[in-house]
Image 1 (cartoon, rainbow, N blue to C red):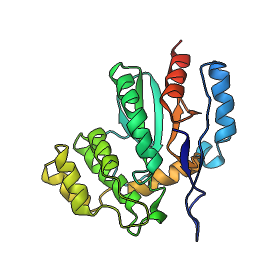
Image 2 (cartoon, rainbow, N blue to C red):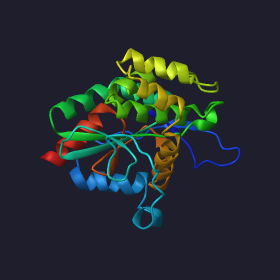
Image 3 (tube, helix red, strand yellow):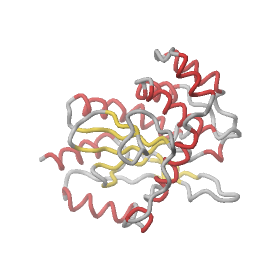
Length: 238
């Protein structure tokens, strides 16, 4: 994928825009090359990251990481962070092209994937759909079906500029992937993890994430395409 959705931190009148995504990032240069990319793409950590922390919500989904800001899938020695938005068209393309690669690396016990579902594009819907979908994915994590539900959300991705999917439609998607327990529907209707979606987004922005999808391998940014991710994992496990 050669494009991503980029956005400045939320503010009055700000809107999302698109730009060409980073290219290249082959195996050559190994760790030093990846570290240089980290400084170029997101810069050094700010004081908010090195020191203070955003308040953690009282309730977070099952299977979150230590910071409570991402859903962990897998248990491999390398961590791949994926920052996404369920309304982002390029995230949908990422899911289609790179999702199977990540699933394979997880199955091979090479990586764990930490998914950070952001409310990055809330301004591009009339109902804060990005955050509502993020919150619903937290409900799916409670039910043990985050990955399957994320697939379904991208497959049913609504167009930008409208209301997005209703709560009933979000619940129906869960039922399609086996999330039929009453607790899932109740969690979606009550917007149980809406504050968590805000927390995930704020933490991502403080970390310098300025586009979706954004991918980090062991904290180092790589282009959100299969080959660069595979090259980065290979370089770090060589």
